Image (cartoon, rainbow, N blue to C red; front, side, top):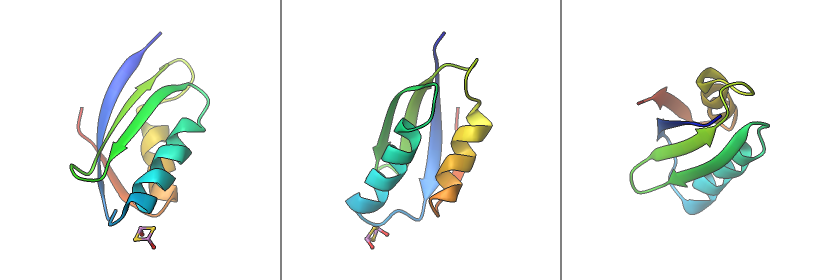
Length: 72
Ligand code: 9UX
C-alpha cells in the first residue's frame, strides 16, 4: 500500500544538505519515493505504512543532523 506524508526540515543550508537527507530517506525499506526541497524546507515521502512508520521517517532525518516535524 501507499501513503504520502510531508515533513518540515530545518537546518538545511545547501544542496548537499538536502541530498544527504533525500538519500537517507530513499535508503529506507518501504520508501517508494522521497523528494527533499531545499527552498521550501520540506520533504514529500511516499511509503508503505506496513513497512515503515512516519515516526521512523522523522528519526531518519534527525539522525542526519536536521530537525524534522510532521506536517501531514
Ligand atoms: Mo555544506 Mo550543507 O557543508 O550543511 S552540506 S552547508
